[in-house]
Image 1 (cartoon, each protein chain N blue to C red):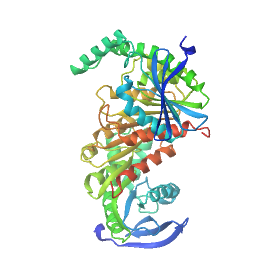
Image 2: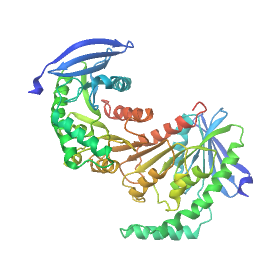
Image 3: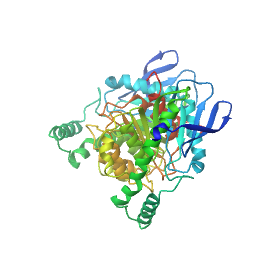
Image 4: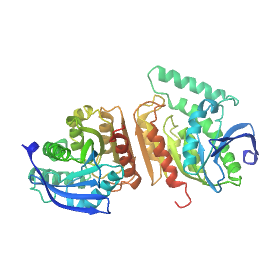
Length: 251
Length: 251
């Protein structure tokens, strides 16, 4: 049972005198927790990413700092099959199929998207829930809790099934199985969606339909020019302000 | 020649000890100028609106205050045919046709949109240029200059033809003639577009196509839930920050 897996801290260091960075393992899942120094009852941001903690570290740290500026703790874990974790061969095969389809100038078939994304969502969501259990058990972290980043399918499933998630900042930077549109309709929390207008690994029309499908009364789409990695700094700041509005006790 | 029309101040008052509000007439066009107290070399925001200065005053003042917080002057003028200005019967007829089409649950024909919007753009753009001449001639205002608000067709024409406009914050809250998509492609300045997802006086697909057509390398679309008048406060703040980034001398 993932829910009962203990969190084991493996390192701790102080950054810039005001941010504590602790690496941990939750079972065999590596992760990083950032908490502002000497704070208590912290809101928490779960920081999603495309996998590969080491390569993502600089961007994750920048996002953790922005969260800490709002007085929030941030936590991230390695994605199933990502970084040094055991590969998931079926996902690797689907990813190769996706790349072939895109390289040929075509669109991936629904089957490829399902094989790429659904097994990831199935595994990642309970891992995030176990992480949430462990971090909320720490004396300095209290919530509310937000989910931030990609993969968007993981964020949508989490937002739909996990009542402790109060707000979601999603990155529409990857394909979403058609079956997940019904889950999007079940999402009712405030949502902020970032879209890169010319994202090479995404389908713009699908992303706009997905935004439309989200059941939330309060949702914002922010689209900016450029490809997958071209999110401008001001867009990150706007996403951070979204959590500033929704993860404070006063809100 | 509108360009040579003198600006005549008709009243002046100080708001909250830090913002000077001056009403003026430019020929027969009424307008309002707001300038932060004791400031010089001010950037300037041209504040567009749907017409009817008196009714729009509270919202325009709120926008002027947000601009002043960034150290910007703001100016607005009555729209051709709006408020107490001489009616433009052809526009009134087209507006009645538009309302009939929308009330019947249909979409307005291209002909109705052309008759509604093109005469307004033809008249409003030179009036904004004359306003710009007059305000930039004041010792305390220096630029850069932004255009903010609706009607979006006026903003697009201004951004396309007026080289003194450095950035445009547009409100996709009204129809745009098909002929203006070519003008949108000629726009190259940074653009921030606000869209209300369920705007009853707009066509969402057309608004997304128009955003796509804008020639600017730097453009942001921000869409929020709700109808024409439901723009959330945070969206206004984001638009204001857009000008903060683009209308400062350092930028």
